[in-house]
Length: 295
Image (cartoon, rainbow, N blue to C red; front, side, top):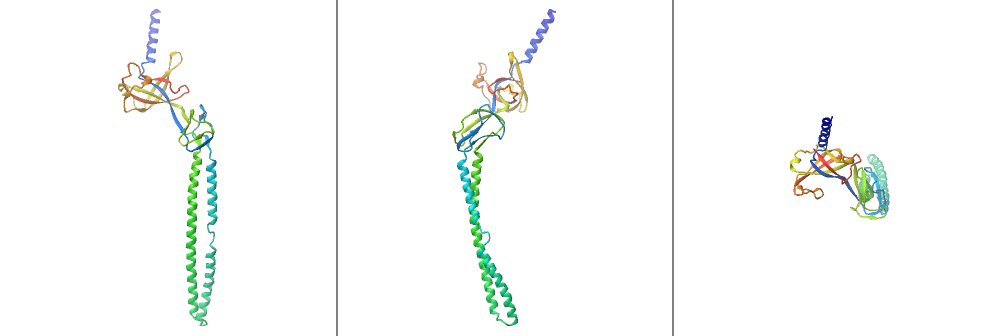
């Protein structure tokens, strides 16, 4: 029995050593983050981005005051309506010329019949034709003038439409959206504060995935390829280690000295390569959490 107990103890020790073998690398978890900045100038009228708030992609988070922009857009709409009212619906002058021409055409037909019967001199027919020709010239000139006037009005309307599109875009950018699914980790301003274009409003971090950054020496790096599935282990309760599976998403092409926050006496002068591993978050992982890489 004594020998059996010794064998069992040795087996357990060997299993424990195998279970927690020497790590191939050390590193820290980082959030995948976005800094959401203002796309317009103005006072923030409302903002629902408190730290810890979970947001969905495309969700409206807040608004920047658009009062002046709305007034400018309404003014442009009024100007366009006034210009459209000036467009010629039906040219009265052209209608008068056409009516006169139709009367002359009828007169010409009557004169022709009289000339053919010998009751009237042919000179009267030529005079009527000349009058019709003059009216046709006047009709064409009036149409060209109206066309020119309409083109000018249409050009003005087109310019106002372009200005309205610009203001519409500025109004659209005054709405603050969440670019991705995530949680608000930092809030940089509050409601009623004035914001300028490009100023950060809040920082958003993903909740479903973290990035584990570790640094490997040249010899260990040969064991890793992009897309490989690897094991990342973090401290668990009672000195245990908890396994998480991740995918290698980045391998640096250039070596660097071991970063300050993971230096030891043995590796502070050793050149290493940074490797990024995407690790799904089951809710237990946090940014800044140290971990080990096992290949």
